[in-house]
Length: 300
Length: 255
Image (tube, rainbow over all chains, first blue to last red; front, top):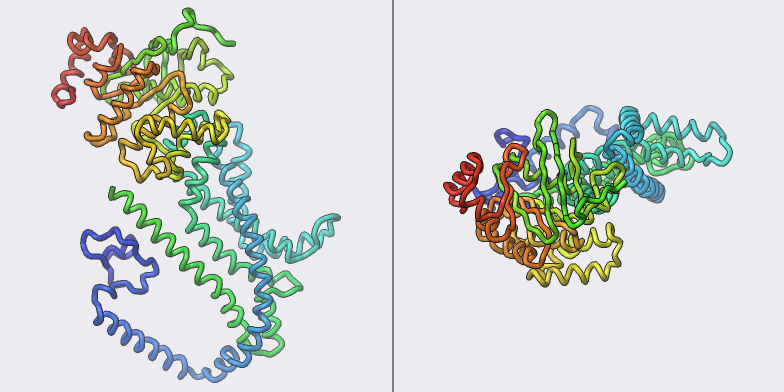
């Protein structure tokens, strides 16, 4: 990278001295372009064309390109499987919408359990820590397999037998562990004086958490929460490994085996991108806004 | 078992209060009594134990020894409902500690509706009345970060007042303020004193202590080394340490 030091806050270099207060794009796509004006745009365009030209030549001239193009980039195939996959993607949307609701609430409960002090709450903290360690330590796909195949196989009376149901439960269990850690970071970032202030007014411990700590904590962790939400959206593809009724990825696989062509998987990828890219940009925007607000506040 | 205080008229009585943080003994036997409507100022260097004393009185810190009575009721008794006691004692901190995610109005009504279980309308009426009285009515829908430090601190005091406390504890409430904002806050406290509010005020504002307090206590290394009417403490302190402390205050130009 062109920025010395890198890492920390390289965007600072784009700004004229004393103007660190501007909300900056976190994507860095246009880094250093504005200062250079028209010349900057020209350089960017030429450099982009050159890079992509080289890439195209390298790829197209690779020995097996004609075969690869046919089996991965077949336009007719793409169109027909898009029509196949798109309706099935509604299932993925359904999976992550339902899962997210449970993840957000269950994880919050885990984080609150862990934040309770004193000997009385030792078992709750133990459960919360044990749970997080366990489910963060196991690959999500394993949990999906274990629950998705295992629980229905037990044929317990009154327990749902759907593989998809238990696959989604697996996603909930796994992601709750990550999200609980995000919440915990938020809760721990609230200054103890806020709690002292709430308690001094006669609010109980739980009221202080509910009205003072948690609302502030959640506001602070919205960007990382959304990040995990993007991860969850993609991981709904894991459900494909245990279900009979296809969601998007499973449908893609079915199309692949029916046609001996991999292009359907690109159609699946596109479905995910349509959801995840806007989401990622939203996260970037929220982080940039939050940072601008913090810096604005610190400058006062 | 509640032991009523001997005279029954005192608003606050602290007996032999001890408090340590680890090995550091911060309070080493504090005795303090306040009659109803009395205003007492605590003075002393940083680290002398003023803040800790106030936090202990509001039961924000577990104490290691001694007893505290509020209107004759021992609040340090085993098994007492600390939330009920804290509702009767207001405390305002140096750093305001307003809730940044709530409007000024909600800051003032939160504990009323949740701790006192007052209906929202009643809590808001009480809040608006107080905000009006202290010139902050037009700020009621603003968030704290839109207010100056002085305004924030006045809101913090109003938030405590809205609970209609028996006693108000003020912990160096002007120390974090720019000099030009101090007067507004002190005026508010003077008004409360004139209105008969029982207050314990830890402060570095000696002029204010002199004209507002009936009694001044000088804290030094966790004990009240000297106490008396402000005229005497400020003009003829008996203790060598009190003299030295006041001398340093004068040299710093704060008296």
